[in-house]
Length: 240
Image (cartoon, rainbow, N blue to C red):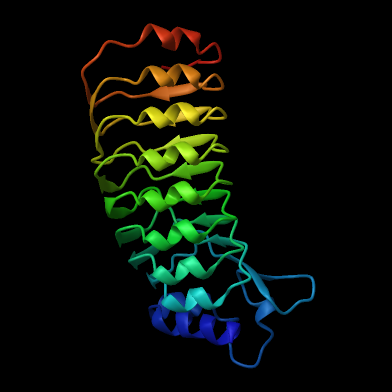
């Protein structure tokens, strides 16, 4: 079933992409296919790593059949289309790298089902719509990169539940509204990049609670207040 899902994806790609996946053939051991990793037993697919392969096509719904996947790395290709809702079936996933493609549409709410996820990078695509509040369910997340897209709406208050988060980069989008006070819950945060958006209102005083913060950039927004004096409490800050 897993091999069939991958072969269906290969068949949907353009001819050049199919030639790059020449080892993906019926009857061969899929664990020996280029870009595919399996568990120690040697049959169950746990990894897809096809970063920078020049693939052209979309990510199929069939990816949701690969329920043992731990790592998916498809960055720096020419993938188009939407992120499939079936991604929510991948409950063991810890790494999802889809950055540097041409993906469009919104982030599916089903991403919030990926409770094992540690690293999520969807940066530098053409994704639109609001950032789903369901991302707040990803309590093991340490890196969240959504910069360089066309997201609108506000930062969900639910982001305050991401207490393991170390790096949060939402820059260069069309986000608006106030920076949520719940940002103060992210005590492990070292990088917070919100620049080049349309945020307005006050910089929340709760930002002083981010005592691990090293890099903070809120530039090129419509924030209306002076920098709070409480930012002076961020003793580890090296860039502002």
